[in-house]
Image (cartoon, rainbow, N blue to C red; front, side, top):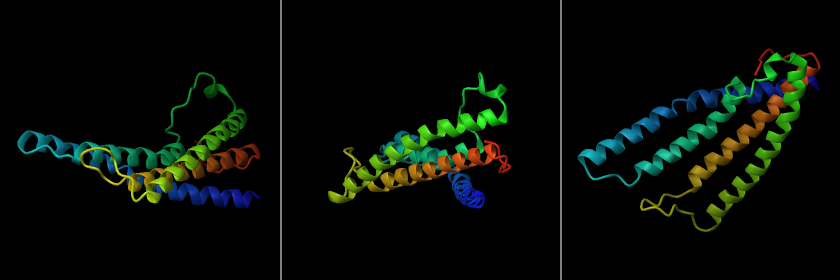
Length: 173
């Protein structure tokens, strides 16, 4: 079982690490879109697509970068008491609280999947704005990001279980 947990953790962490490293450059995509928006509003006719495209890029940036942030321990944690606890107590607390995250992500994934299927089912759902882009691409990215976050949360649970068994993975998040 330990071997299975270690293999799962390595596979999920490797996948989310590389996706996170690539997605982190999405900030430059957003900056480019917003720069074009400013230039077009100043010198040309305002572009209809820039605001919504920047929002889509930001959604992709945050939702695909979330699993990487959890893996790196970059998420915000209330450290009033937690910082003084032993590693074992931290592992017990993390193993318990990550179950709530896993439940939340499972519900979110179900809702995201239903919304994505709705988008496909009714001939391509479109945004009600003047630009009217199809919504299935961003909904697909959202479902993928939620799924990767769920896999990473399960990976964190596996790490906590391994820590409680005295078999640390060597990565403290």
